Image (cartoon, rainbow, N blue to C red; front, side, top):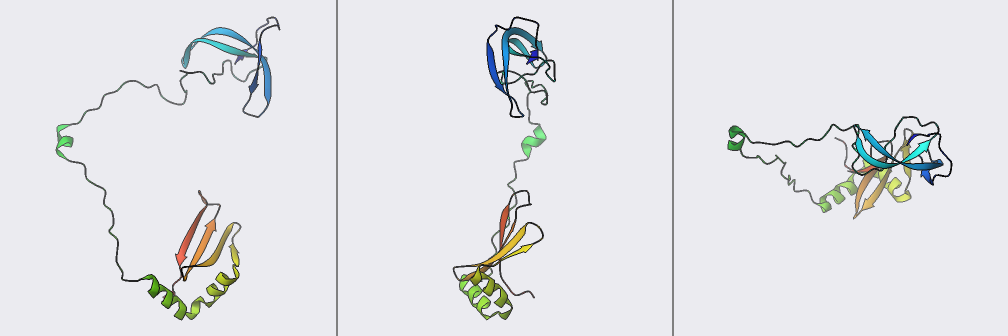
Length: 167
């Protein structure tokens, strides 16, 4: 987009959809553009009062002003770096506690402190805490789970907790 020149109104016109959702019908002309972000011949849209003198958009080969100019570079590896091989990341190994699903089911059945949770799981009652958080209880394969959901978090996520007696 560029400033509109005083020229005849019989030029070809196109429709442009602007970022704010409005549609603009404006004349188009050919021009040679030479600026730090693009050099070459382009079709320019003329506007009566654009915000900027020149606005580039949808031009193949135009450079982004927010990104530094890209130049070819070289990489090298020093002798000391070459001597040290890449190390794999440390990861924790799985801990075998010997607790099975059957053990969890039995412990949950015997635990009287989970009566309120069992009642909520059967009725499907959802508890609202704060302005946006909710939690509920469900049974999966005979094991009670507590689900917590917070849509305010960066990503709306559900967290499940296995229900055990607090010690």
